[in-house]
Length: 88
Image (cartoon, rainbow, N blue to C red; front, side, top):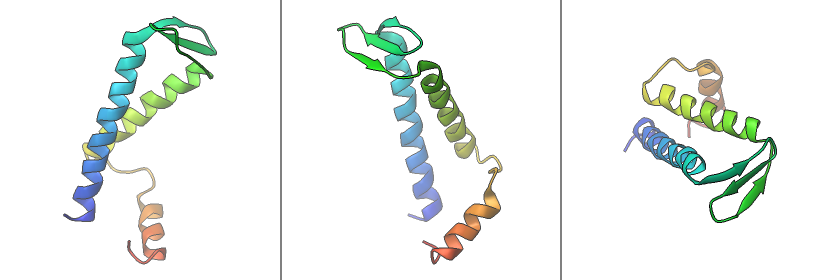
């Protein structure tokens, strides 16, 4: 399997994972504030929820763009990075 196809496989898996996390957060939320999220069984996490949700959404959008083969923002930088590492 070529590097390009392997990366697409990983991107598909990552998209499924982030979508599952978003679905879980939406379905299992019992209580949420700006800094705390609690699930239906009482387990809680503390973080800046606005940034957390925004990051998940941005990551999901990035993966969709990658799988749709949109033009990357930093294509040249990535090509130079891989050349510097010996074309890994």
